Image (cartoon, rainbow over all chains, first blue to last red; front, side, top):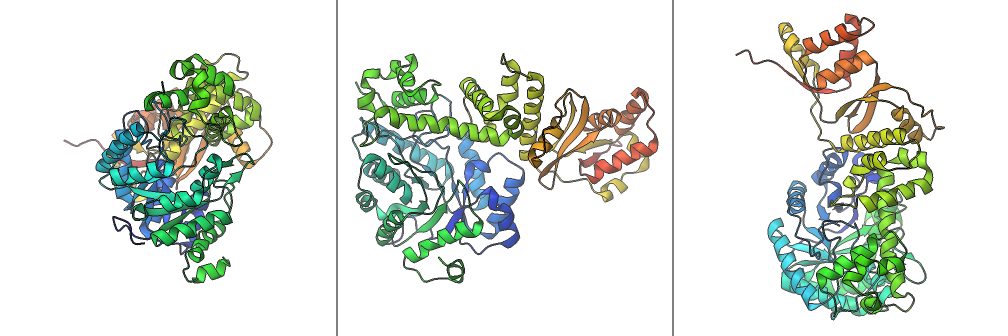
Length: 286
Length: 279
């Protein structure tokens, strides 16, 4: 148990900044601990999104979270993208920058999905060098999230958790542990999610993600469309016992309810971490 | 022999992008060149509940759904006019021809007007092309840089003798448009959930702009269009005015010109007055 390797702060309990909540946030300045920003939504705009982001970053701690770095792709790194990402991180004074352990396209095409890596020695060596290069360009450690996956490669010789853990150690990057994704991927692949949680190096975990999902019977889709289920809360508690608790973020991206509902869901994490209630958790009745 | 990382990725992408069924995608020449179809079941492990085709099929389904959702957000008018089935068919053809090459989905629809214009067999092509072009313009103006707005004080500070050669600099989020179809009215009706207005050919003129981060447009008369078009293209005020006074079929009075100009300034269409260097 203890702080992460870079002493990055525990920002508390935040939610993802979403367009449908812009007006509410600007009008009410709700007492939320922090916001996570989807980087790509703010990199090429001079319009309202950037205006809102500036207002939010002025008042709240911010973390950047991307979906298009494609750190595992065999295409060259997109230096234009990384430069813009760094500018945005500096502009918002982001505490850290995260993306996913995945690839999103190859041969110049972007599929706009978090595609799974084959967990091989070759992939590991390759990704370690890529993560090091990105961290150097961004001038800060990169934080990588375990994605939800729907297939496994027969060529894999590593488990996902050991691949991620070794990558984090060797490339000196942080881990954004998405607890819902652990549950989703382990269900889809018939693996034990508790064993996954127990093998993650605690000192590398700088952030948690929590979300709801869609159970299709034969598999689970990571839709961020609902409340967090009990099994995921249980995994979260289990991991917090190992990490001591780090910045926690609730994602809700489909059928997004009111700000209060999303914030209340995020604040449930306080109770699961064994922290005392606040005025707001009492008000929301979480 | 097992494919390396690069070939695994090229193979998976080829399968995801293939427009046919899951089986056709895996058996396509491009995919088979990278991974023989016989090796597919060992490359993608089946799960307790899904076979290898089902598992890659999840990614294939999500690919099209995600891109369609993004294009629906950028082209609500097009989606409304075509209906779900025809719009979905349009998206399939479009992303096959123009797969995303950007890190942001905001650029996915950049080629859609061109695609509509160049595709055979599209009914009401001229209208749809102009509607798509107009919606793309709205997206670009939405993301354009924010500009300062010309103030009454800045206007008052211009010496009267300088107006003749002064140039007006428009804000970045502005475009003057000559249109063949009433696409603005159509979009407005879609946005407000009103009945579909006429889509018959009807020339009109408009300025589309952003004010306080909201997109707007003003309809223009032909003479007002000519004047504003000249001004935003850097023509000095005196020359732009005499052009309007000279070319119009109906005379435009000074009162009318003043009224237009005052309206445009009030709406924040300009950010600065550029004066000739006295030297």
